[in-house]
Image 1: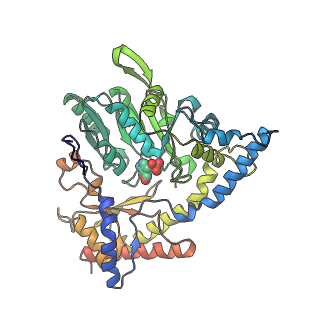
Image 2 (image 1 turned 135 degrees about the horizontal axis):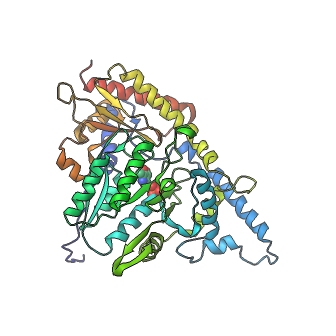
Image 3 (image 1 turned 60 degrees about the vertical axis):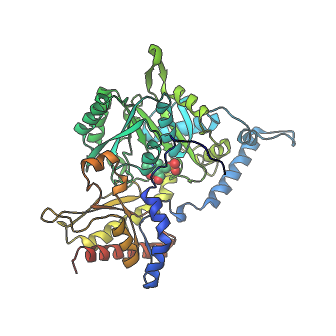
Length: 468
Ligand SMILES: Cc1ncc(COP(=O)(O)O)c(C=O)c1O
């Protein structure tokens, strides 16, 4: 055993999702002992029905073979270019062919001219979050991250690693963050001596808030960001997991103001999470020390090569295959790929919405839930009766839902940053996050399982609210 003095190393709090995962086997046993079936409305993973990699692997192999044919190597001993690139050290920017192809396809889908030289590969969106935090934390000066209340657990976990960084959060209504609060929080942070590099958010299919920001609110947020000189860090994993009609979709910040935005693309939901493909994209320029100016891309690249965020060229070349049709022509859009996923998620969302309306729609004064325009989640809220909440959605409550009703859901309180909970000690204790993305079953059984899960949830809620 080595004893080291490390007085500045802090143990981070365990997230509620991890705590839930750890306590689940025991709770599941309790439920099963009572003869209850376990209903999954907790996990936020892509559905196995749309993440079978075998079709993709066959297409990837055929695409690589096609590349070799196009290359026309005469020497059978020569190593094909894609193989050499996939297994060598590459530039921090990774393979150019993948970036060039992604820039064209993604740019066309979202109406942006994407410059491949500004696409910085990241280890998924998580890598992009980490890269942005690392970049601004590096000087060691007091730092304030502005984000929503509630916000993504992965961002809270990463932001919590730096002792000199603090979160200033902004409450939301059904359209997005409250812009007056956004401005006030930026100013409060600066008045308290913090630098404010960015506002981190998930405008489409917000995890965990379960809705997408309106176009009007995005514009108001952008105005504040411009006036206050703050970047918008746009985490966009659910951009394509979108239920709105094309003409009703709001625009991502990257399409509205690439010079004010840092956009995080991930292949985890449109493709597969395992290969950890992602890109950070921005056209922002920063005034840095010594009165100099630098592009955010350049700073992110330098930070990336000093950090652990090196991309995997093989995974990127594999992602390139996804950007090509079966006949190896370049895709014009990623929407047909999304459609392959959306058939399941759209159906699941409808089952969830219909089930909630059927089971609890008679009590609009007691319960509310979001109608997600994108993503994997709806947020369920217990409304106050005579100024009082019927339940408190704490750990004991969600454990009881598993043990007594077999229903697994995630409490919301842990997604509220600490400052939001200091302002309101009840923040999130009236809410649950229900996910409709994941189940162990497929096809008709998936539909039946989800219907049963939503029914079981509604019945548990009626029970817990004293409606029986
Ligand atoms: C808002 C948000 N950001 C980031 C991630 C993680 O993305 P990745 O798998 O690309 O790291 C998720 C995944 O659940 C998410 O919901």
